[in-house]
Length: 541
Image (tube, rainbow, N blue to C red; front, side, top):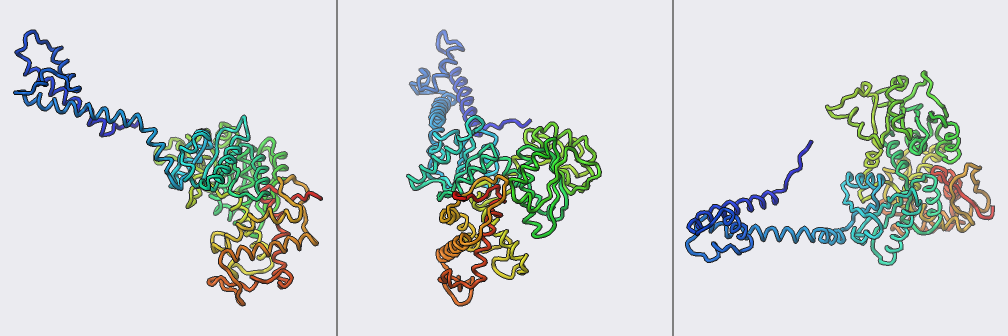
């Protein structure tokens, strides 16, 4: 057990008081020895009076012992020190709040929940300043005016709207003041409700708000960590059917699309008592699950199944631990192939993975424990935030679909500035994709369309006059974004000089291959939205 360390100021204060009492008692004993009837209680009383400048033997001055001379100055100094410390302690909280009100470019995390703790820890791990607020009444004290981002993570088990209302009120406050966080995130415990709220937000013109679920963020982070292993994988298993297990299936499917390109499909085994129902629901809701994977439902894992990765993450962590430690069929993979995801039992991670202090075998390196809270700290962002919001992820998906279509048509990798992974794109191209997402509501409104949670039915097919209307709007948006970014017309494309031959060219005058690029993006819109559990809905259809 680590002992608490006393600050040097307290040690100094105690030493000063002890020295003044010792010197005062010694000097008073010497200087009052000839007083008739003097007792040791009198000496002690006179000694205490030194702290309030009222000790009679020392008040008249004159020939005093050096001990008393020293004590009558040291004791008042100790008293003044005590008064200063008391005043400082009395106003410390107020001073702290005044400092925090003036903080800039920090993150505010609202709530005292597990989600709030996980988000705050992840932000601090990323090197960002984090201020906490219990509820909306504390936001100004947490420096709302100067904050860069706000995460609302209050307990929404009884009231699912509590965090949604928090970010709504903050958004209104920021708009009225003209200052405050431009990124607002609301934790929503129900993943399906979070998707429904994202759909409604994506369909309106206001940006900067997103809705997230802790299990979904953890699953996405774990899948990103596994990218290198997934690139060489053919089959994986997810044991469990709770929110985390479901989110992990979707995240693994989405990550597989990014690392595999147009290669073979990934086989995912979902193992749980209710796996058939859950697998059907996932395939119905999420495009990546059906487009990139073969999802197979099993109530138990066959002994002969060859797997590259096994992820154990049921809701019941006690059962997860027992399954991991008592099922030898899971132990035949390579090092790190058996992944046990822990939350409530996170303390057990050090039992297997402790650096030199572990007390249980990790199956010769095959067993790897992962803590949900630690997963959020995996991604690093230069500005204060934990995850990519839905706008960023949709922009990446737009580019991913573009790459896949171009590769299928025989366009060589890196043969054009846009034929590169998202991370390698120029800032202009990435910003263009982001603006595409932001401008989506306006383009859909032109044809009476909106966005809704995917219900598993037949996806809308965009064709005919509607296709050309949206493609024309696509070209107009592309041109407006490029001009805003400083591009202009030039006979030959030059990215360094920001010249492009299609800027200033009307839709009617565009070459047919250029028109087809715009049409392709519109045709693929249902597929892009399906990656996020969303779909197009037309009011008049």
